[in-house]
Image (cartoon, rainbow, N blue to C red):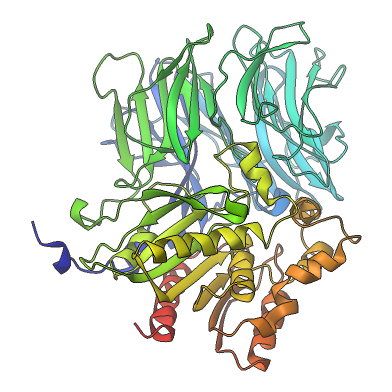
Length: 636
């Protein structure tokens, strides 16, 4: 094998812009008893277009059939982050698809692919709803009543609505008016009960949310909606009905997102699987799933100290680990002893993991990566967990990736501050990170206080502390690696997007650790964000910073724009001009303030991009220019 020192740097067009985002896999059973795997792909080569594909389960040799070819783009704009854009069912031997595109709800029927992989549309796409001053998302099919149930965001509120499958160009009909936000509705197996989640500002759904429930009348009206669980200091996630009528939900009153069950007709909840681990994640988008019923057992993706495992949870309280090698899992679904998830680990890129849980084989799984491997095993920098003393000396976690180019000693270090900020640095193979390590950089991806995956107390470290706790933790991670002799103190850069961009700018303002920074669609001014952002995050800063406008002084104290004179190192900005979450004006003002102070600044604007860059050409440009900027400015 070639020595590590001779390995070639990873090309940018292999690192980003090629990997489709795999989302919302699910399993369907055909009338011939065959199982089908249906999933979504977001394709950067097609400017972020999302499409649906299908193939037989556990048959990666068969070419998938694209069900929603261009120009169809499956996308929801509810809460601006969307998700939950496709529902599907097998009805009368045909595949029924209902999707959201161009602001409308559509349906189409397909003959299932035959044994040769061919398929044929049974009908042309039919538009079920008219375009209007609203957005739709997060639907389910109630075939018994011939309708789609989902969320409509309109006039500053969420609504639970229904749309008939037997009419065209209609307006969604109101079923239930929540106080504020809602979603994640699920229908019981007998069609007689509906459960869903609601939350109200200023809380985000991972701060405080409730499970609601109602019996359904024969014609489908909600007979008596009421709150079942959750509360002011408790967050719930993914309600799910078991076949026997029990309701399952994750909630975190114990300090961890654990699962609990409610028996039909009983107001108390059973908690058969207590653990110091998480079985949920922040509900930024619709369509997420960490639990599934496989026909006999409950499956759960469980996160402990930043690693995900797949567990089988028996109803008697026993917990068993499912043998499979991946520790980054999402989008879990199951049916009749089979399961699927989007999975990766430090050596394998994201792909579809298909498991046959009925087998006794040592490896009852197959994994199909979204793109072919581009790195030899020897060229991969494997994530190492590090724990260090973060803000106020608290034990804090990060993933460290050493240089993979054969260099040793104190290397240039890139500190990554993830977005959210209530997200997490995950361990799955990131070719964007490998791009840096193949060029002699070390990379530390910090799970600063506020990150998910480490319990509610860890997540709440950031409450009232955004711009302080996260900044301190990112600086402490870099300092720990400097002290260990693994990072060069004069060659420390930091980068992040959105909330991570805010952390990046605040770290440049309020610490002296970093020598350059780059940010994508960064929050620059907390006051401006409190006064001008989208509805979903309109009150998020009440928790992260303080009550608005009562605590305005705190907003000013932490806003990078108000302290631009404290930044003395070079900064590179990337901004989409269609961004509704962080308006471009914030980036323009921040860059102007830095230029006025004589700080080297570069700005790249993208006409067609919003909050998050979808186009492969843009992704490649951002990666290449960030590395070139740091290399030049740090004298590497």
